[in-house]
Image (tube, rainbow, N blue to C red; front, side):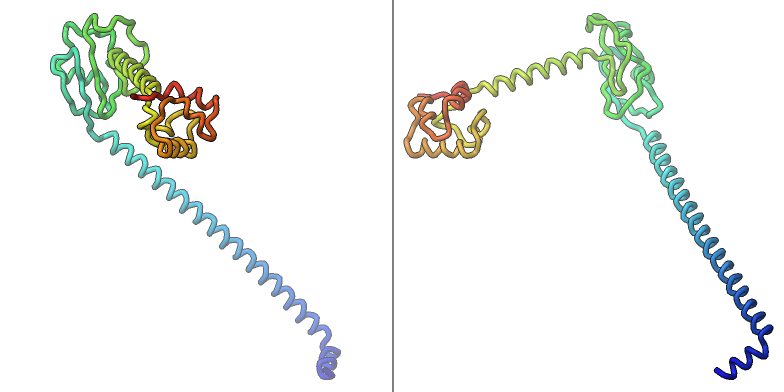
Length: 239
């Protein structure tokens, strides 16, 4: 320590200069290190953005390519009714109903031109029906959804089928079941009957034998007047 003090006293100026030089060197080194680190981070961010952009471009290209492939694929439509050559035809996405009519030999003289949209786009498995004059006594449609044709017969059929389905459903709902033969699954379909009540009804029938009248249900725990009112229209006793 004494030697260091002596050296310092003898070389104060040189020591101060040396300390200043070292300090400046440290500052400069720290600045360049920080700058280099910032540049490295910036380059990493740029590379990440470039990579993300390339992925987006690649994905968009793949999607566009897939779309183009789908657009270029052939598919089939079925044309019926007042055309000269009804049948199934291979078409492309660029074609319209008019192209299919042309491929089918054109319209018959008896075709009702007002009931078909020749500009309609085509979709796979589409059914095109050209009605005959007088077959549809309605005004022609002004707009059509893609994949649909001016086919009021089909619409009428759909409506008729829906009505039939509703009638069948109503008939099914009004069908009465024999209380002495009813199964658990049938009981569960009845309004007001859950799993527990269904089991109680079947247990009662097993223990007491045949029901003689449907009012006996009210002797079962949990089946009161309200529940019975819901059930009596759906149950019967077959002799």
